[in-house]
Length: 242
Image (cartoon, rainbow, N blue to C red):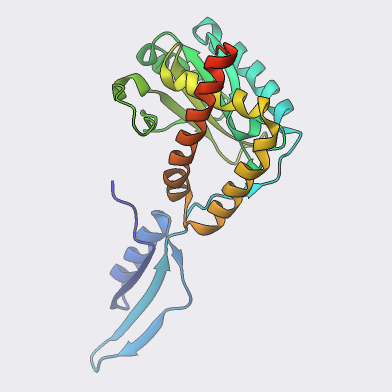
């Protein structure tokens, strides 16, 4: 499905059909932009209504020392709800890195043996916890990698506007490259706190410079690739394992 136009103007006779068109646009997520303009063409009143589609902007905030506790609580809830098919549940992403600025949104990773079987098994328990399944089934493959994209598959749930906070839940195969990358990214930054301020500032500037979260992610991914290149050398030198 294509992205909605950020700005549209609906025009037509001032009748019930026009009202239905505006109502349908509002139901699709558009918002009224100003008041309608009316004119008379000698035969009927014609109305024009501007509408805008709000962009989901990335908002990066200072590190919140409550994030780890929130993650631990949710990990406990998930472990109890998902059972033994959840082999490992980890707090990942920027909110798992002390001192790192981030979106006020936890990222958690569930490691499993098989994506298709757990997608059905997890549906009910995750819905009870306020999660909804999304259509995102593929992670970004790092630039320069010749790896089979199928190895970077995942299943993805999210929770929004919940009293306990927003969450992205990434379900990945244990031992897969994308499961490993998420843990390596987190652990490299934890081991190199002097690198945190520069990356945090990059994210703040990026969030203010792009129109939405999609653009934010598209620009950030190549920078993550550079971090991972350095982190892989560290992993080889230290014997780091996920």
